[in-house]
Length: 176
Image (cartoon, rainbow, N blue to C red; front, top):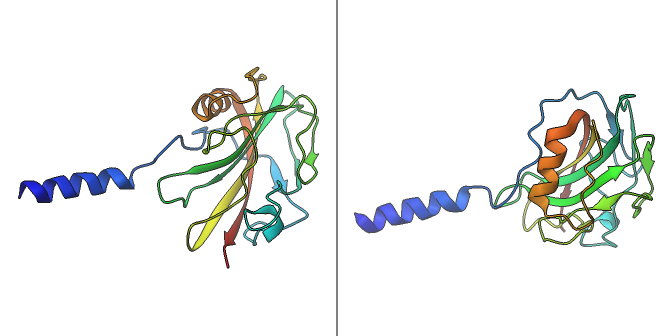
């Protein structure tokens, strides 16, 4: 019986999140996010994944509140086996920015560590099945002023504490 309880407890621990989740903000979803490379609910082209070039896709958005002092962009996968996997965190994007070309980091913006610990974009690379990828733009009440390479949990906390509006584009990817 004791062995059974150990197995049950270890199994439950394995289902819990392995790392930081997305910011838990309750800010309004008033920013419209899109991409010329794919539509909401559509498939991410291979070139933006680990099976292709692994560069970030082009993004565009509108509806940033006039009082926003900075933007943040988070790309994550809520379907990852050990909890949400964060692929990219961009901090302190200028609030007047309305788009990003593929593979770009705008001047003055900083990349925080992703779930691999690296301050870069890590293309979708699901281990099995179809995963959803959320491209979320956050309007912030103030710049985070965090340095490049800031740990993921600290970056997400800073985003969460200053978000005044947000918007999201969700797409899917399945490896062949």
